[in-house]
Image (cartoon, rainbow, N blue to C red; front, top):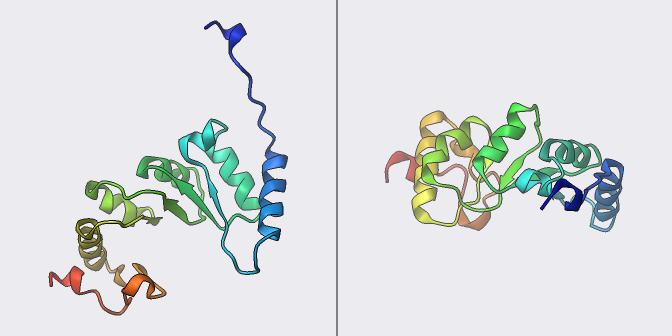
Length: 145
């Protein structure tokens, strides 16, 4: 392919903002809205799309990898960033350091996360609302039990 045969994508950040506001208006008050910006915002520029979406009311951002989340944090994004799939256990330290919300699907990852969170004093933040049977005041996994 030559540059002349490639397609061109024009990114309309105002349209992204309008879409976020429109979709949020269709949900019940208090419903959280996640803008997925993985794969560099689907080729539109993750940081640009993240900023447009959060300025229009997106409550959190969804990414595929820890690296994508760190890039957003390093660029100054403060909104919650949610991983859409469980990451490798080796990234637990970075997840805690950068305040990334992980997807947890295995006991092994949950144990690794709890142990490091407990060591760093983050235990109560693992499950602040006691969802899925986990109570924030009990962190037995982090104590090696």
